Amino acid sequence: MTPLATVSLVDVASYLPENRVPTSYFTQYAKTDRMAKNIMFRAPTWRHHVAADETAVDMAERAMAPLIERHGAAEVLGVDILLTHTQLPDLPVLGCGSEVAKRMGMNPGWILDVHNGGCASFPYMIQLAQMIMSTTTARSALIVAVQNAAGQGMTQTEVRKLAQATIPGDGCGVGLLRKSDEAPVLGVLARNYPEFAGDMTGEVEPARKYWEPGEGQWRIAFTEAKIMKVFARGNRLVPEVATALCDELGIKPSTVDTFVTNQPNRLFLRNWGDALELPAERHPDTFDECGNLFGAGIPITLDIENQAGRIKNGSFVLMSAFAHAGDFAAAAAVQWGAEPKL
Image 1 (cartoon, helix red, strand yellow):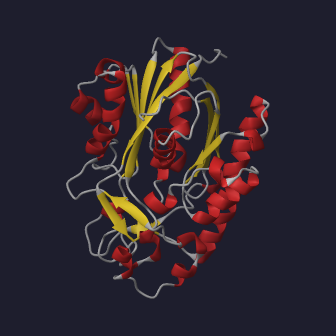
Image 2: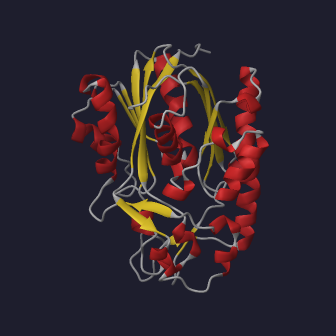
């Protein structure tokens, strides 16, 4: 096996849409819903929604702007690898990778749209970028995680009445990587759980396939039984994959300086921090301001913490997340080196 190249996460940046939405937006439409009592659907105080005419490419461009300001256009736009994850592709099938390259005048040798990474897409894209840089002449990468399903899917007239609609928020997080040892990626671990594939499903009334014409508004299908399964898996998978990576690196999880996870709800966040025996100040939480940002949650939280000066250079940063109903989980560890924009 080809030894992995030393790759650094040089910097992160993010974008949150201007439309900051309070929970009261949803309560005015809420109907009696047993799910509203489930702790999985305890609403955040705020979330951000994309504008009606805002595309995934728009969001990526806005998230990239601080990187270009700090590192220069040649460094960011001249990357060899562009990896993107888009929660809700603007055109079915296609991610936003090629359009981002076209908009920004980029010409990377590798453009990949990573659809299956879900909430764990950021560490997964770090792993993919490192593998490509280890086996090719590529020396730099830009990874982009777009969450744009809240202001579009969750504000549909029938969906916004449901408890699940209050949880997601929109945003975009990006990371710049290059083959160097300045802020090294210490390890990445990704695990697939095919036995849980297909457990996340959608529904519409009256029943039809999502692409067929007809009445009704498509949404993720939740039942109390499904929620219990996802809760049990999520509780286990995130600390499990994080601890496994720490074991590989010979590090005790309780010594992690900053632990950043996806942000599905308050209960997961509390349980994950407790599992690694970490105090709240070492497990940052953006849920009340941003809601569930899915795959963008990790880079946006990293950027917020970094710009606030709460991640010291040289510190050990651990990321961990699970995706969908638990069919995928990933963790990444880095020695932090991004300079905050103070």
